[in-house]
Image 1: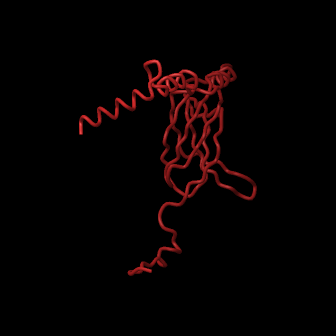
Image 2: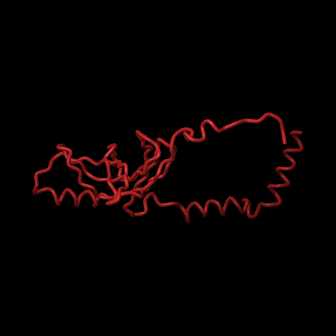
Amino acid sequence: MKKRRKRLNTVYSDSFKKNGERPFDRTYSNFNREFSLPEKYGRNEIVLMVADPLTIYAYWEIEEEVFNEIRKENTNKKIKGLKRILRVYEIRETFTGKIFENRIDVKFGSFLGSQYICLPVSGKKWTVDAGLVSETGRFFPAIRSNEVKTPLFGIAANAAGSISFSSGGA
């Protein structure tokens, strides 16, 4: 068996070699140089995705200038200790519009990153604001994400008693 494997490799490599190298090796190395993905895209955005009923996944790219502008606007007001956070809101819709109820604050350090966020309840609509919070708790929003709705956790109440299993095939 060992001899046969060597022979197949030799036939394969000899038949595809061109100037001492295989063509796909050359193509792949050019592909890496010409079409590498950028580290960042220069967009200021936060994107939310539902991971499961009690977890959302957020990824973001925020330019430092966005936060610098907020700092400049508030330098005269003597607001100190501004820290970057993601503020998670539960969205409740009423006849008069949407109500954003603050649920969770998540600190973040990098202007480009991602994080799973655990939620206290399922079956709700959620959105996230990135911004700065002062030592006194005042929040200065910079960017808002898309809205997502998580599914309910568990079996539906009206279907719990009506599930039946039959034995036998059909």
